[in-house]
Length: 497
Image (cartoon, rainbow, N blue to C red; front, side, top):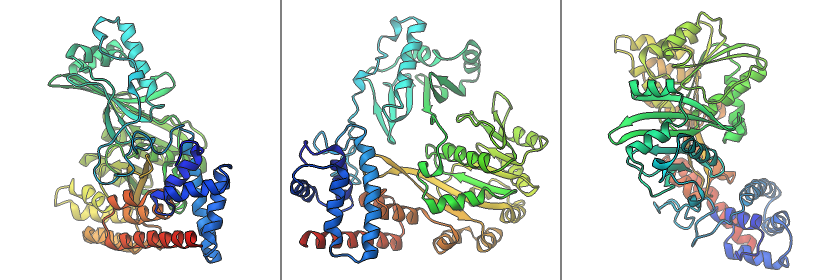
């Protein structure tokens, strides 16, 4: 569309065109027919009037709801001040929308030259180095970056919308990397790192918190700084659909059992865990003990008494903290990471003895979570552990972040609940049957990744191209294509009318 069109209308047409509902040219023509006046609401109503002329009343309401979601998206994107197309077709958040999903190279629209350079670190005082690092870290949230990496033998780079982007061309030397990564540490922390050559800690820098990981590598010190959310988001804000939020809340009503939140690194497990603790903190009156490495999102005691412990600072390890927590009269135990046999065994035992245990694992989907949970045990113990898990498991939530096709990210997830059939599958060791059971149990509150993606596409939360890139189930893909075909036919009929 032409640059004089209001940004919110440009973004609305962009969202509609990405879902094959309205072409850019048709959007421009509609704008012209309105006398080149009005806001996105007026434009949306005019489009809806055209579209609904040939639709049944129930379809008209569905389209009105759909368009409302598109409008919310358009206003949100317009607030960034960027148009949907720039630099020869790149969206404001940096995706080449014309080639999205085809492996086209990510193009950033962010000007990192405004950030302070680290090329002259060797000539700066310790205080000046510290100020540079603080300025870089405090810039991440505004730039929509999740991580900053400052490593010897590499230029500084960030992760933005899942993509790695260099923010400078200067390659940090071994000496530079040491001064930069030590800039925010106390003398005690510096000595601890030099002795162990690895360190994980949480730092407050201004109003922001970061999870910091330092390590020694062949070129020198490498540091990664992950930005922690500045507030506890609700499950809806994170990207969970309303019906699934209700199912998760029902899981949190149990007074014993095991709930697992899983996914790859960087999939938002920590923020989901924080949202779940916050729900418990509001609706229950219990003692919650949370063990984390490190503490990222701070939880205040509300209706619950929440005790947060940090591995390294308040306890030696997850397994020792879990053992100790059983003597502290907890109702709910939250384990930031279950990665060794003893921790997993103690967690399962605790879930059987009257505690609700919530933990995380690094697994790719819900069925694999059960395999991972059981495979850490020696073969002789597995029948017993299967029986214990079948009885204590409440549910598994597996999630990951993917591009939404509109220049941002969206959360996709699958939910497995421990119904009678799931319990039997676990106890019999037939975990290969879990996926098909989840597919056919949507009415019981379960969903697979593909079902979640299809639902999000139907609501305009992910583009067709981005959705198809993530989907695998031919049946669900056919459902998505059917929705797309219906939209295309309705749009064509509306234009003819």
